[in-house]
Length: 294
Image 1: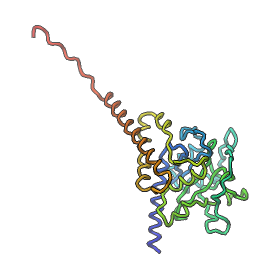
Image 2 (image 1 turned 90 degrees about the vertical axis):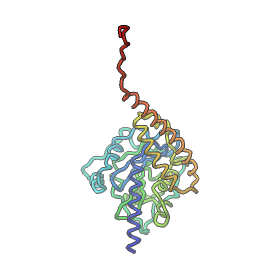
Image 3 (image 1 turned 180 degrees about the horizontal axis):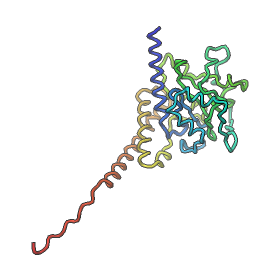
Image 4 (image 1 turned 45 degrees about the vertical axis):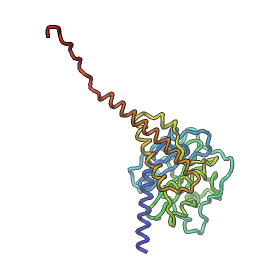
């Protein structure tokens, strides 16, 4: 039993490492991660694919603030979010109502009576300070040590995805029943398995590649930033290529994406080197022509 507990702790630590890596990335087309604390990650997922650009959208102040809490502990995040004296930020345009072309109630929260019914997140839904963007749904993905495994919660547009049967905060803060999370204890589930399931559940139409990149956004970045961002994305996707499930329908699509991203990264590197070379190249002093007397 102790051996299994140690293995589960190590597995959770690996998950938190993946979570931190994912939270540092930007440039995906269908989702944008925001790292919040050591154990939490906010995931903004597109509702409808309307040629929407990610993550070039204007991030709300609340989202920016919450993503800046990555250096804080989960407990401090909780005390900040649950402080009754702290006013919640208001959206000047009013709440964003997600379009509802069809209801997806296949992934229901755990029903009352299940052991996972009262697994509440450290940050209650009612005190969520992050505001989802237009045409997006916000999720909380966390790996709390006290639960010993990852869970996912819906933080906005609950009615769009699940039939919650009420507005009670306890019901809203019930973790989602995802196949990837159910299989986490017995199979080699990684953070990308949970993310891809959430994207395919939320985005309409379901994308053929949940990890598709917004190349137009990446190419618009300043040169030095483009080099760093493309390199970080390349590291993540190449890790997926090595350890991901090759039977997934989108695996080949990710391989194609990696090839395009690698070309962009190498081109950016060459351009960086060329510019650095032109700046560092010393100006050659003019050599005086020898006089006829010499």
